[in-house]
Length: 223
Ligand SMILES: Cc1cc2nc3c(=O)[nH]c(=O)nc-3n(C[C@H](O)[C@H](O)[C@H](O)COP(=O)(O)O)c2cc1C
Image (cartoon, rainbow, N blue to C red):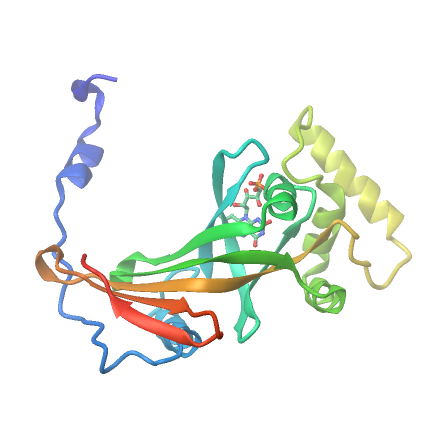
């Protein structure tokens, strides 16, 4: 595509230079425990009305070694790790079951912040998947049964027909059971970076790394 083909609004967006403002992430303010720091930032992201503050871009490794990314919603963050839910037979599901190494970014652009997590993703306990699935709206439960995520389908009509078939199948059931192929993964982190944009691109980056004994060490890296 030639330069001339770039439409005006995009052209100005590409030329914009936002100077990230007044906020900082100093060692004296950051928690010693990265989970505590993460929850503090997540709380703030929600309070400051970030759109979908729990949206997380997840990078996995396909069986052929190629990286692959997509957005998922973070549904839990505690001492066990960072949980999200999906279809185990999807592209990401298969990738993770073969190769659990992941990297993920939670971008809070409007706050000039991002958190980058590296770790190993493991399926969550079945009871956790059951509990989360049962709390979802019925439409989403029906969709989970009706969609073989990441597989091709002939048309939108064919997909909607699968939904009707599923609705019929569970018409008499008060609750929709969790499909076995649907459930959670939990990322057990070994590295978590907190990035705070600052003026003139001199950003703050605090990286927490889990040491052999399980304790977290923290260092500042250059922007
Ligand atoms: C904001 C947002 C949130 C999403 N949340 C999820 C999620 O929690 N779980 C999920 O399986 N897909 C979610 N998706 C869809 C995925 O990005 C992706 O299309 C789907 O999981 C299939 O990915 P795969 O083919 O790489 O396995 C979300 C997409 C967006 C844009």
